[in-house]
Length: 547
Image (tube, rainbow, N blue to C red):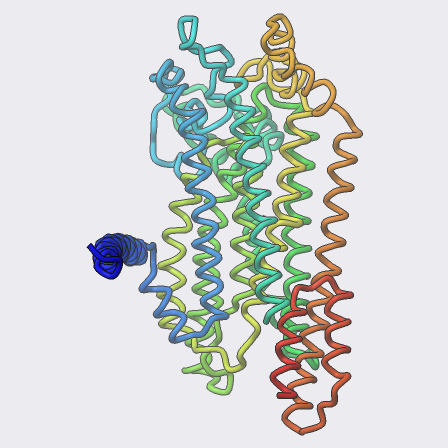
């Protein structure tokens, strides 16, 4: 066989191998394409199913289409707070309430106490002896021993602590994310005791008259119980409506300054009321009642209920009556607009009550969930029937960032301070609750650490607790790191804002034909000095302009 024949055969063999290899590659490419397409379709179907199951999606689109993004931001904010309370309920119910109900399914209800329906409004009576409040939980380690033991003290403490930490992290992340996207780129218990001790008519001796006198006294006590939340909610309703009248006499050059003034006034009002109430609870109630935590929980329950009732009244007086007056009586007033700022601040006040009550009433988020559900549809109907779209388009995105910031401070920070003061400073009740008999709530952690110190395998946990968690230096370093990050973030933000201004000026110069060579170089140096990552974009911009 000649050399040419061998060369020819070799070429045919190589061609056959290359053909088989290409077929294998084509088959692999086809398979990968098919699998990739299947995954894409699956992802698209999951996204579509998620959108279909998303809560209030259609209603949100309807509100946004008719009334704009400013009004829509209220309903988004309400939905966001609803998710907070659903998460709070799941955590508290799963780690605190369910273990209590498993080992103590029947609450210790005193003889003669039964559910009469008025408890829904007052939160007292039958509810006082259930797991609705702090006093309904045991201080014993549940179980029979071994791995089935469940320490209610630790569960109660860590559940509340974990929830507050997660809420704080979520608020910080949401606030930073919203800022980056929206700004850069675009009861009186003592009065009840006085009523009970001093209002009895000792001249009444007939049994029937005694019974009637008892019923009358009971009604008076319930009315006195509701007096404090009634007055607080009335102030929160009337004073903001009075503030809204200031815009008739105040003339701001910028409409946003008018909104900011209303926000500042309402925040000072609501936080001042809550501050006075917290001081009263911590100083007077905590030193007067044997199970003062449940008393505070009942007061917060009544405030939540009364706040809901007055929000409904606010919708009637603030929107319905305004619509009737503007269309029937004084037509120059016209149809009212939806007051986004006032309604969002009502939500922030309601959520502050829920955060404060997380320690005193673990199931208070249930009431908040029901309240927000009803409030969503109530406000939607009121908006549709009584309000008109805003005449001036506001910067809804930046307003949403401000609302999240207010929700974090002073709302969340104030509630966290209240709970922290209760946990670290105030002595718990001696006769009720999971921390009875301890000096403070935090003493449960110290007792736990003393138990772990006897086990060699957990020495590292004790070391972390003693040298890290209880160390002032640790918190000082954490604060220092946070301040450094805030400073860096602020510098980057200012640099990007400067860059955007320069880029806009550059666009103006390009459109007018006045762009010169050094302009983009100045932009590049400003971008580098500000710490931004847009150098390549500007270089590309320069090359495109001069090409």
